[in-house]
Length: 462
Image (cartoon, rainbow, N blue to C red; front, side, top):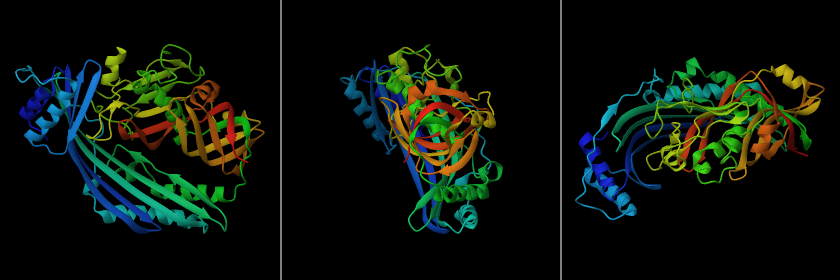
């Protein structure tokens, strides 16, 4: 992508005003996106992102510049613009820089590169999803099926001598079914993705099952009565149910907010912040996980980080700059959407770990409550952890049994409060796929948990 002598010249220019650290992030990404609406192609697009980002530190200051012109003169100009923000350029200064190339172990071997697959084959996969959804019920009025894949090659070099490369291939499919009556529409949604190639559709993801599931959810909710509002025990199912922890608690454990003192968990290392039955983990090494990678976007090896153990806060998610500010080690959590974004601390695959209870034990413990089988979108105030999430598919629980489906439910609360009210954790850990948006752009992330029970929670409804 860039020759070594070019990298060295750019790093030297970036340090020319007295910076103490400089970094180059080069990227070349191919992406493809296909959308079918009711079995017909609505969108078929491809794109390429190509460019270089240059970052410079001076004490706790950080400056970032980027360009998609990778000629030497353009890169030097961008590096100088970054350097001059931190001080006057010293044209006589010379840094004794060196580079030692590190070859990372590739934990995600790709069998079939998606960008090499003809669009007709991809469209046939989406048509199968559409067919299965439409066939389940005559009430399904619309099916939207999407497939996207990215093939990202990156280069990272810095003034500490690191030179390394990585290639990341990710594939995802999204299905959405709408069930309609004269006055009502309800939606079913699934969107699995992996750090894998096109083999995902033969090895991991069952397309007919996704089609049937989204149609079943939509059709079931179409006939469900409104959910009663109130405060009650709530059982939240696995997979995408983990989005509540991710949004309401996970972001507050990122050093981006902890170092600034804007997190509710700042200064609470070693304290009990959750129920003793809660252990929460961020693991960027899950085999073929959507948010997994060989290294982060600062060149640090990916790792598994225990955030909360038996309710005790054990670690934050720390990137390079905030490690410097907080006098802590990095946790391989520096991530960014593209070369156009400076990295900062971000989650990868974040989840509540398995507990000891079976599904039947958790549901059987509830006299009257709500079983949130699938969660949808929501909103979170990152400063306070207060959230409001829609329940995509929900059921009342009566006398220890799942009973009638209900629609229109929402879960309302505050992340730190909910952590303390989790009193049963199941044994069926699984993960859901999402895109996480924050200061450094949108990045792929798994959310996850087993079935959990929250002893008391505000449920919105009628």
